[in-house]
Image 1: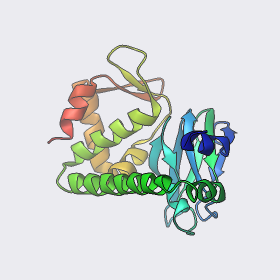
Image 2: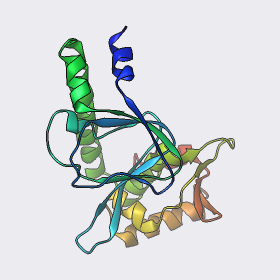
Image 3: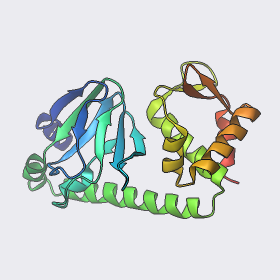
Length: 211
């Protein structure tokens, strides 16, 4: 049996219905999850008790991997946006197999390093990016987790997000996010369809991140 099959053999499948909680911020972290189908959102509560959207994660995304290397509580609440199928790899099972296959440790360290490097690069990029660029980046991130590209050239976000959600993800004031979104709607980069945002021109949206 290969290493990866061994890991898969000790993983536990978990299914979630829309709005069902995977875990809460502050919960003990016992391993990581990988999204196989569907989409989840990561949120935190602000000081005034408002929910802040941090990210939307779709198939292939790993959630809570830091719990494999530390004993800190979960930093965010993760819940399902649509029907989801995930696999849960418990910390004890991970270490049991990794102790017999040290290459797993090296691979895990590479994954964590890539995640940290990607975060650093994103922070640096956003530091020199306009408000419109940051908003565009937020929409691109949402498209990765929520996008339905079945219609040629269009990406329909399969979950309703607010301008406040976009502002939180982009790290800009709501007024600036609203202005940028309205500009994108007027220029045809975005549209609204039954309460959902639609990315009509993905290439032009991506180009805004270079401004």
